[in-house]
Image: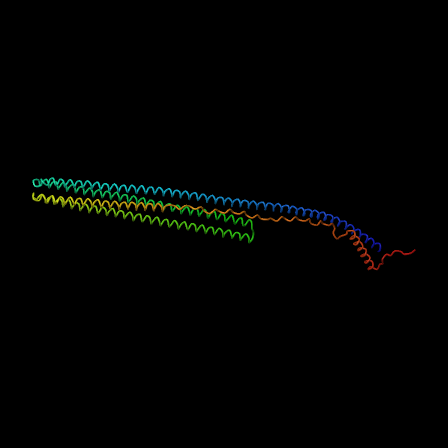
Length: 464
């Protein structure tokens, strides 16, 4: 039984050794796998680190390129604003120079028209004076003939009557010619008044069109400025979102939106001011047009009044001619004893003609002075209208401020990874010791079983 236990113990020890050899091989394979995994993980950590470094460099490069592009675009916008400022001022100066040139031409035209009108009045007055001189000479000749023929009236009353009738016919013809000429001059003057009124209405029409064009130009410029403000707002929002994050970006975007709203408010205010100025100019043009129409009506009434005065004067002169003819007929029935009275009456008639000519000349002189004053008043009104149409000298808009450069962001360099601890082969195990322990355990188990079966331990022999 003892030998069996020993054999069993030896077999247990041998089995433990064989098992430990298998475990050692498994540990070697696991160690190689752990080494491979450890090297792979460290290599992957290095590759991830190199990737993070390249990604950080690329992000920094892209961010700086975006900032550089935004700075360039803002600078181009600033240069464009300066060019548009100079372009607008140049166009305003062109319009102002054209307005000044038209003002000078209108002044020259007013002077020429006034000179022509004054010369026409001077010619009319010369005609009246010349006509009065001929009439006076005719009256003197008539008086002389009357004195010469008074001696023959007693023998030739019929000849005297026919002479008186002929003189009455001439006087009526002269009166009719004067009235016709006066009415013809009045018609021409009305035609001139209508032409002048038409020219003033055309000027008012052109002024309305120019005022409408200026308002449309202001609306177009306001729309263009709004588009630029919106473009700048979108650009600034993109820059704020690119350069900042979180609450900082939200605050920056709110600031950009507030600034764009302020610019829109200023543009709306500028457009409202332009519309108000256009409305005031339109009202001023309408007022000038109404005044021109009233002035034309007043001038036509003056011409009609002068024609009525001429008609009344003509009727009065015809009555005087008829009265003279009646006297001539009365003289036909007067005898030779009335010759002295006829001569006295002829002298009185001559004096009446002289006074009538003087009154006619005085009336012509007053009409001439009134017409000259009217011409001066018309010229003054035309000069006022021309001065009112002048443009104010343009002002250069404020110079746009140069945009500041955008801030440059800072980037964090990726952290270089440390090498993980290298695996330790068979950490906390001893395969040979474990095999011996397992063999001794088997022997102990065999001994315990022997004791339990009634046997004894093998004991070595002591002594001889």
